[in-house]
Figure 1 (tube, one colour):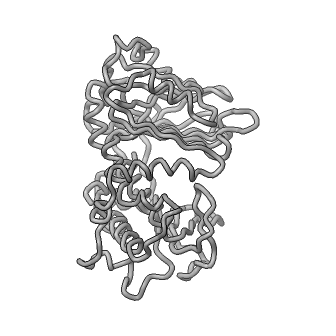
Figure 2 (cartoon, helix red, strand yellow; figure 1 turned 135 degrees about the vertical axis):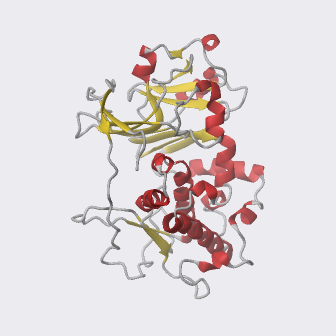
Figure 3 (cartoon, helix red, strand yellow; figure 1 turned 90 degrees about the vertical axis):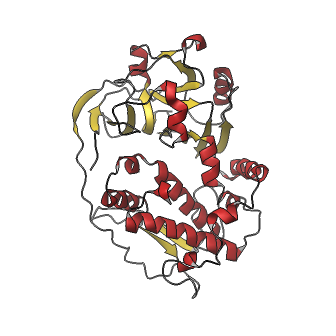
Length: 393
């Protein structure tokens, strides 16, 4: 059951967004049927090349991830097939996302946790498990098999930094950039980084939060298909599931606990520059905050160490701190953009176990890779089958 989740609507022009929020009704929880495997699925299918999204990969497929779909009339193949390297990365990213997913955050019971996880990964596995692996990669339970943490210990901080840098060269028809915020980072530093981003159609400004306002600072999750809908879907929710909304005075505490992972994803019309679709989470409407005097350009009036990234065309505000790690990716010549942030230290801890697999020039240690894939599969199955929260794994 989704708790304290209030749907609102808004209207906008073709290219810009101005939110006129009003309470509509509580969003009901959907009932989902169990997913069916596609008709073609027979345990084979590794005779095709990897379908990695961020670039071309000529390796043969080793594993698959089946996306959830509850449309009984859907004819679309929701299966993505990956080589072993990219299968590991894809599973790791799924698990990483589930730790901070708004839907998982709202889940209260084991059944709700399992449902949210199922919606993200209805099925997954390797096409040709070694005989010793057994069903579902049971080698993960072998005491002699290396765990994710043991494998991660082999990588130093310098190695991790180097691997993160290499991500930038592996974006298909686009660009990637990131920024590690520091205690000394200023609004000017952040603005300079945003101004230097390649591709994309967003217009960014950095502001400061002036104070706490409980009503106005209830975080939002926004879905808006602007090509087909005159109104978007806006959900208010509280990251801490309590009576107090996000407070800039305690922003680092929220972020360090994994409650704040602001994100803005937008699809743009390459010919007109108009917004086709926008999605944001852990976000605010700039028009609402500005109207209530909660944003300022004057650092002397702002809460220290906290910044508001304003994207004016989508009317979106993403809160970040001097402890954030911010990433920006623009693909398809800038017509598909995503800007997201999280706690830097927490991100490095989560990504360390599989970041080395982003380096496609590094020879793949197959036994080590199989052990890592099996461990990730085991963790995801515990979430899906047992309703264990991802952060408890």
